[in-house]
Image 1 (tube, rainbow, N blue to C red):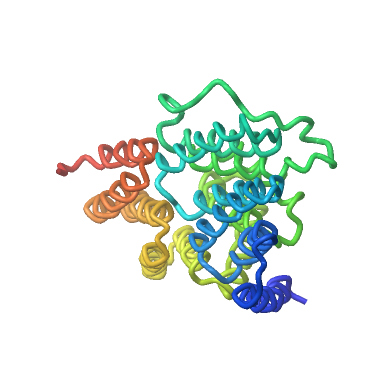
Image 2: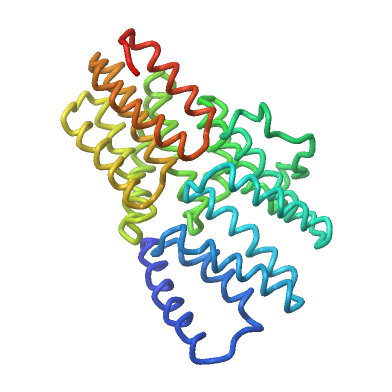
Length: 333
């Protein structure tokens, strides 16, 4: 039976259980309740953004009730959801630094490692770490140890950092590690990793690297996004449409590719995923630049990408797209 079908049933049960909190006094259980619902389940049918504030409340309730460990679990998922939502990077960095300050009092090596891992990703996305990095780094121990529960977080963020930086070979290596760890994908980082899996497979196909293997990887990534989008269009439809657009672009299915790029842009905009809206605009611009030699159309999409990346506060991506714009050899304002 399809894993996402089972998850949809579990989601409905969990949603019903959450509604009961309004009828009974469950204040002592808030940290665990919010962690299990908003951290583990809600992403399958509610926007990533919807979990941020309840998880923050779960963290605060955990500290005030003496349930520190569960509160810190909520804190980790608060930042994770913010990153998945495309929250403003500088604001997210500020929140992470505040959390690291708190962790000097509420000591937790695991939570500290998660925050440092998040921080490295956000710092890279802002300015490649040029002005925002810090000396302290996460320590994850032996990444080959099956008992190391932090391996998933390490490799997932390694995938994101490598992909956004354009390191396709490194991204591919980390993706293989992720896929071995995540299994069927019953958690959000597994689904998001599969999205990057598909995008990276396209880049490798264009470079004529392991074409058959990456075509199969792309097919699996699209199938995974279809399953995920069937339960949550908000979180995954834009990702599905972008993978479909990229697939059509390499098969030279011009009009369908354009339709899918535009559909991905509109879906990301509707969901408030400014980072993925920018990515879809960037990919559409590259398509027109490289496949269609339509520099005017490429410039139109690149400008949209720059606007999105500026709103996201990613100087790294703004600089990347502007270099592509400079290479079009046309005057723009």
